[in-house]
Length: 285
Image (cartoon, rainbow, N blue to C red; front, side, top):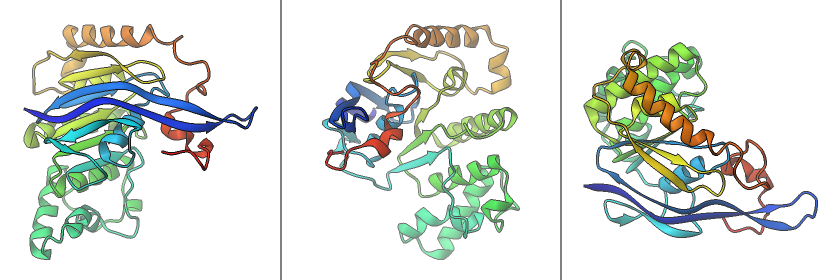
């Protein structure tokens, strides 16, 4: 059953040319169509600047496409809502709140009674392995632990869809592998629909049911790769799997073929969302 339907999304920003001072169109996404099933784990990879984060912003409702539509459970997305949880690489925790109060935030917004709220928070703190840290503040936690709090907070208010934008990019390699295994375990238990943005081909293949490979700007879907690997998975098991290595190699080849592609006017290594500082004031976003 389809959970998310994206139909011919197109996103355009007005960017001021530093040489001419004129506003030029920056096409971030073009003809982007995708259907994601309920409970499916989808990873998205592509060259820097191809519009991965722009696509996720549109799904979250934080940004409106220039044209095209997105529906969740058949309902047109018109803005942010609690049916979507968003996890970024910067954790985005409230530094003045303890772990349990950070996890409780979405439930407070939903006006869940305090006694019920505390029970739910403890359940998800346990799920991400942070028992005993309920009363700690974010500055007392490691990067990996902070990301676990962010995951617990997003799961606690029971969103239909979990959106994850490079959530493990800021942690060391060992912690990243631990968080990958943790996310796989949580997904096996909750079966949330997840869209996961990453620059790591290995991470994308490890986690997903399907990997969406995007072209250079303007971002289009080059290919959707089915990941026919048995579950449950762990990072250690996949490293020893020749099938995993072969699939990762094929995805990498799809990206490698695009390294010299793209629009010459696109600033090197820049994501569309990162160009906000150059967007002209009169541009419609």
